[in-house]
Image (cartoon, rainbow, N blue to C red; front, side):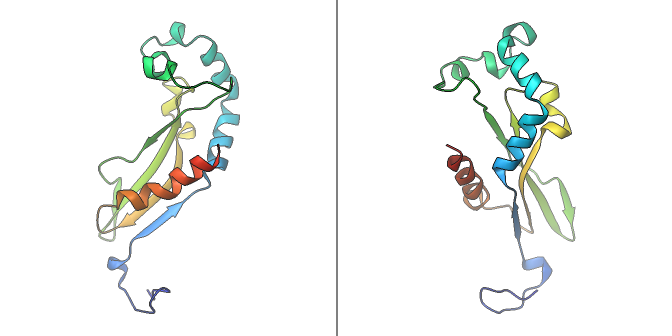
Length: 139
């Protein structure tokens, strides 16, 4: 592979890749798909699942200037999902807290915001900075 930054050839094994998705689009499509369930759950979370995040003290103390807020739960597991050609794949996933479990854990409710493919552990700052910036830009 020819590196466009310094015109040096690098073997596939020495190249790490970071792919990022459009965070706004992912959140919007997931929220639209689950809008009815989100609205129902927000109206009666204590009755549905008393021990869930929506009933926790920290969640209840979050500033609430909008009635239709969405809360993101971001995940980048501490272990790679799979190995490909000597490289490991590390997905960056997100779920909406306002979708009740176990629906929250379904594949179509879990958003993939990005992925790192490399022979080493991903750099945490590099992995998160662009995603956090996209989330920040939503406000």
